[in-house]
Amino acid sequence: MARKAPTSSTYRQVGTYQRLCKQLFELPDDGRLDKQLSYWVLPTDRRLPIAFLDRDLRTLLEVPFEQLIKTPGVGQKKIEGLFTLIRRAIKADVCNTPFGMDERHATGTDLGTGFDPTAVSESLWASWCESVRRHEFVDYKLGQLAPSLQMLPTVIWHKSLGEYVDKSLAEIRRMRTHGEKRLHAILEVFCTVHEAVSTSTPSHTLDLQLVPRFVPPVVDWLTSVLDLPKPPTLPEVRRNLVTPLLTQIRTDLGEQVADLASERLQTDGNTPTVKQQAERLGVTRARVYQLLEDCSKVMEVRWPTGRWLLIPLEARAVDASPRAQQLVRAACELFYPRSTSASQTLATS
Image (tube, rainbow, N blue to C red; front, top):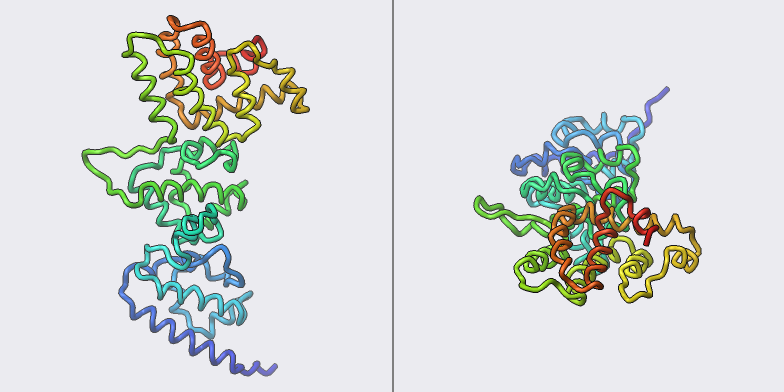
């Protein structure tokens, strides 16, 4: 059988390939040639040469064009995709600097439209991971740092950033149960951390910690209570402890759960029973108990040390008014239940 004669399009692609290779090899050897081709991929890319993505540029570009085009599954359209990725490698100012989409677009900070996972490249992801490693945040939990737990699956709330920091996006996608929805939630956490620390420099004398914004004011108040001559009043407990915790619950679990929790913390004698709450929502009492137990699960990952910081407050509240005592006790039982579950505790109230 006679060989198929090269077309004008093939001749054009040969010329383009040779030109791109020449431009790339003339650049400083700063590491970009050792990056896998997948490093230069964006989630929105189409018609990519899958067979080449796990090969580094240095090895790949040593292969003659005639051999590349004969690779199974690689046609002229996939070759054009290869050219696109090579051009990105050439245009990158520094190989470890995020390329392509402006980083502000990925974070949504330019338009205020929220996080955009489709704008995250392997390059941008690598820069976020480097921020986590540089500031030694690998032991932090995803749920501790997520903007909201509503978008983060419960099963990975307690997974550490270190479980992902040394993996590429392609490797995470190949992990079991890690579909695009879960990946997007993980990306948002890493993006949040990067935004918080990217402009800071590690210090030998100062320590940088990341905590939910509601925590420092509550800790300051709890500390001050121990030094005051009088026990906290009902308005003080509600303003400095209950309101911040409920605000965080609203962020992490939504309006419905926050409203249920707020009702459980009423002290005016009008607190509805769990049965009444269930009837109003059209759900079972077991479901209401489950939703209320979620409040303690949030605090377990958001502010685990809060359990121990509230113990002195309970002791101090013994001398407070009956309603202030009731509110402190109810808040501790809801957010940090002891040996019994929240549902068992609430069932007796």
